[in-house]
Image (cartoon, rainbow, N blue to C red):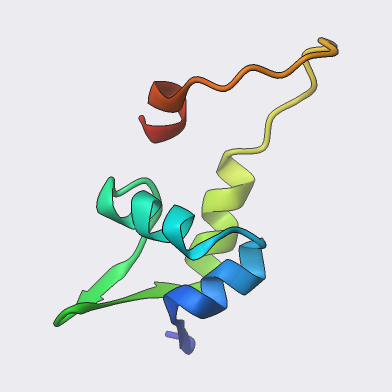
Length: 72
């Protein structure tokens, strides 16, 4: 197992806010390890998670977000 990332390190890696990382963790949207009251992330697992979410362009000019689709 490689070195585990902290939430702050994951924010920097993915270029998202800390509240986003905690929301994704709370809803179990991304893989994480629970160590006591702390959470940690394995970088290889995170990159695999990112790859699984790759989408092809639909050709539409506008983007619409559905929070339920993002969380589930």
